[in-house]
Length: 116
Image 1 (cartoon, rainbow, N blue to C red):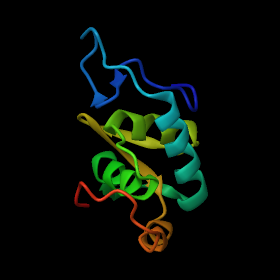
Image 2 (image 1 turned 60 degrees about the vertical axis):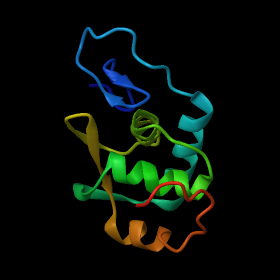
Image 3 (image 1 turned 30 degrees about the horizontal axis):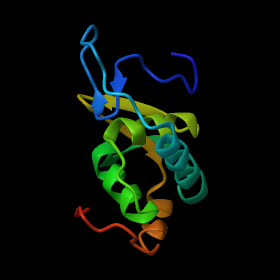
Image 4 (image 1 turned 180 degrees about the horizontal axis):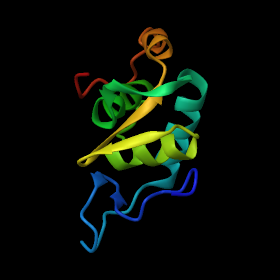
């Protein structure tokens, strides 16, 4: 797969089976905000970090940007930000540095409808 290319099976809510139509559309503004947030607060590590799935990261990011983020929007934003990933069913795991994740925990929570 080409670097930073969004998979065709990725929808707003995560990965879908190939050929399933229609896939829910992503909100490009949210994808851009995820890309900006993750670029600013998460460092890239050499290895994929299995400690935080895209589903957990989506809650982490949405609580800090103050807007709902779909699982697929989180995945797309992180791919576009240059993070490497491994698909895991409808979720993904990324090469997010554990120390940068822990540092970002101290950021203010703006949206608290979901628990991390």
